[in-house]
Amino acid sequence: MKNLFIIITLLGIQTQILAQDDLFEILDNEASQDKNYVTSTFKGTRILNGHSIENRNKGILEFVISHRFGRVNLGPDELYGLDQSNIRFAFEYGLSDDIMIGLGRSSFEKTYDGFVKYRALKQSSGAKSLPISVSLFASAAYRSINDFEPGREPSDSDRLSYTTQVLLARKFSPGFSLQITPSYIHRNSVELLKDPHDIFAIGMGGRVKLTKRISINGEYHYTINPLESIDAKNSLAFGIDIETGGHVFQIILSNSITMIEKSFITESTDNFFEGDVHLGFNISRAFQFGKHKKSKARKIK
Amino acid sequence: MKLHILLFSFLFTIVVSGQERFLTKQGYTSFFSSAPVEDIKADNNQVLSIIDTSTGTIAIAILMKSFMFEKSLMQEHFNENYVESDKYPKAKFKGQILNFNSLDQNEQEVTIDGNITIHGVTQKLETLAKITRTTDHISVQGSFPLKIADFNIKIPSVVVNNIAEIVEVSFALDHKPYKK
Image (cartoon, rainbow over all chains, first blue to last red; front, side, top):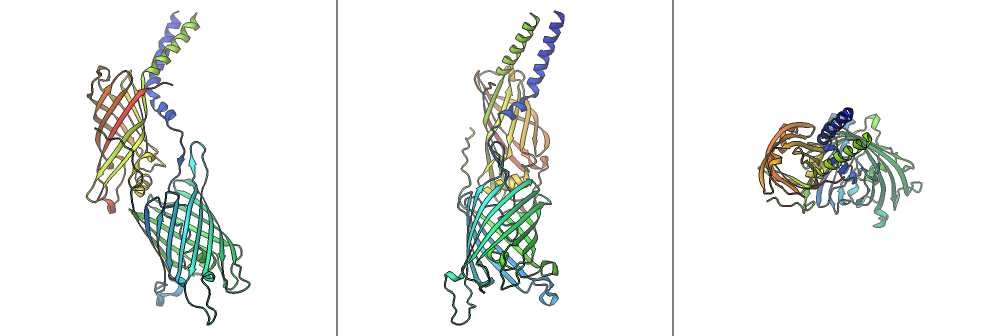
């Protein structure tokens, strides 16, 4: 009987201790098992040249200015390429948190481009987790430069080309993300008969975060059936993302001089490892239109 | 016979401890930063809080990603650059509501004394709160200032005019009896 008494007292003390220490455990158990979406797989909407799975959220208008200068190995006479410059400026807007549209103009071949990007699936943890994010991207580019031979003026349709991409990305850790980008590019017209109208490519890109606001990125696109009329090279880029407030600033070294898919994936001719490297920048400024999420907050008396 | 008593005592303690706790899953917390360039406010309606009425202990867990901002880029920056929600997903508070057992059914002001953990840094926190306790609900409300630098959250000099050094944290937690 005495033993029993001791046991009961001990049990009583034990539950008392438990009652004090497992409050957080109860909270953990009660925490909603909702999906927890992975955010910020990449900082910007571009890895470097190409699109990342990231969208701008609803109501955000981003003004993007990108530059690619001439080849660094042109030497001091051309100030290492800085005398030459290709520019693309664009307005890009989040129609919803998942759908983003953009309109841009590149100085290279006076090309206008429009795109739609849709975040189809989001990487998540928790209940019914998903290991990767998937976005779908489609763009059209209109080459408005009048460089045709006399009597061979291209029709509007001939000036168009289209890009379709499936962006597959995973954020492996807060500091490391990887993306695979199969691309399909269609040209309505080509230079030579042996040039393919349909080009397939596979891109790979990633980022490694150095600090909270700085990351190193890399991107490579392998073209399966390149254009024959030019000495096409696969596009390679390395760069740094720097984030300051409403800006993301990217400094890029690449063998591509253009900033739209149909062009840098299929029309790059420079060899990165022979020093045909171009310095470039992507600069963006985001403006918010309307409110993000109406907070259903209760007023505190 | 021995086993009988043992089991009974077990049951009894569990039942008692079950009734001793009050919980909310939809508690409210907000913070407000007022700086020369802009005011920033974020709300969180998914705060978990539990009170053990036998001891007056309160434990609060706040998922950082549940803070909603007016501008979605702010929300992204908050999670990515300031509180690092991937590394430190939750803010936690554990403390003691002083003189908890002498409370009656009227609204009263009490002192809550405990430790708050944000961004992996734990600091002592003592604050006043209004508390109303009835048999089927305990409501706790209040606010307190929080110095961002105390939690090893650095504000870069570019945005020093956008974010206040001290933010005002408000909370309203409406607990109901917790049944397992």
